[in-house]
Image 1 (cartoon, helix red, strand yellow):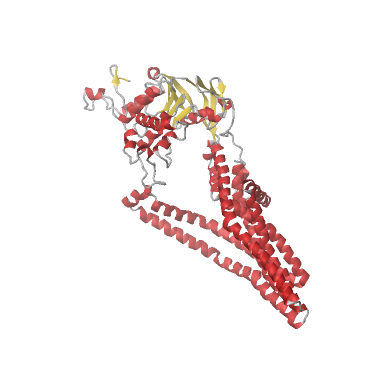
Image 2: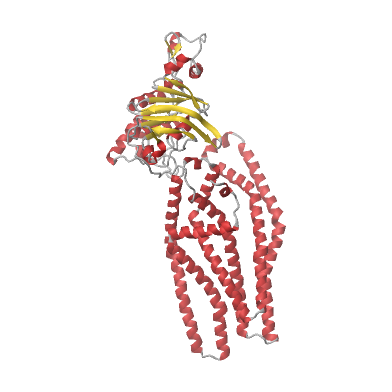
Length: 633
């Protein structure tokens, strides 16, 4: 995101532009709502001005001039009928048109937001600044968008109504216009100062409110329940809660006196001075100097009330517009963001086969930190590859580049001799099945969590899901659930949903890769949460099932890479060693050293009292064993 978009404050010009953007956006989604909203705000201000500036004056003048009762009543009835129609129109808007339109806006706006979030590159979600703005843009976006447009019309018609009110009062009595200065001062001076105090107070309260919200959340979340009962951490939480409450009280006291004075001044200038002052002035002109008619007195007193509330509404809507400007900034910045790797990017058809994938001098930096440096490697179709190395070596980043979640900072990645950036992104990614270590379960059925929306014929879906669950080792557990593969996972929306262990969840993730028909399959630490027996069975199934596929897996347990056709050892963001397991062991380099050290964690050393049979038997945790007179297999 651009730096200017990350600022917490925006200029007034930008705020105006953002509000106009909101109007254009809402007009594209639901033009009728914009029209009806504008008409409704116009009628509201028209009604205020009509009654105070024209209706009262006409009736009183008619009575003073001796007009017939029938003439006056005809006028009143006509006005009543017109106002009834206006009121009926407003009720139809509020009771039917607006609710229907709001549903349409909700659907249209969130469709745009979801499409955008689906289309931006993965980097955006790993960028905290972008993600913060994304969540702020999504929060009650439809309601805030409609409120913004409503405030735009309130401001526009409020300004027009204010000018008209000034003109009417000036026409009746030039001096009476001076009294309008009081609510102007009250709203634009004292109310503005009150807004600044509210902003400063809320800002100072924010850390304490966050602490209170955190404690409230901790007290009901299940993942904290055990610690709350097994330790005395509750006393610490209670102390922090009390400190936060005390902090809120201190902040309140800090601003209370000044806020009280300003609020008193606001009320006096906005209401008291104009109401009392104008009444005294009008009464003097009418009763003492006889320089004002009763009709004129009725008009200026009625206009006094209308003008005051018109100014208040205008001021509040104007203030709201600038507040909404920041929200619209988030929304606008998100919607106008130009994707680096758009998910809907078109390109050449990659076909359905992968003969080779080649990394040529690939480097990649994330937030100015180099993660991969001049990396070269190749995956040939139908072969099995293992990526090994310490945490932070760049293995997962390499997979993200392969899947085009990112593009290399320099260098190129080729598939079948062609730069992968030239392919249609969706068709290219459809060639890969993945099982990531940092998996996520969705609050859906087991079947849907395995299929993940893949286009599988309905008559084949259950059979293929069951077979994938058998291969991953999750079938028996899933079938023991109340509804089998139709059981909902998590308790998010179903109290009878299943919450499985980490190992069972991991097996379901692995089943996703088994169920998908594609030429290239990737397993990222597929056995990290499994016991040794389940791990051995899983790898046997992976090797057997993926014999005709290109297979890449990442594993920290080097015992699982022995059967790979080729092993790449990554360190410091590049390939340090490559070869078969035997070649790398014979080289006695970094791979052999890591393998040997890891093996020692699983095997007892000579002299530990174990029998020879025990020493030759593979360790259940690592699967290591002696072969050929004591060499590591």
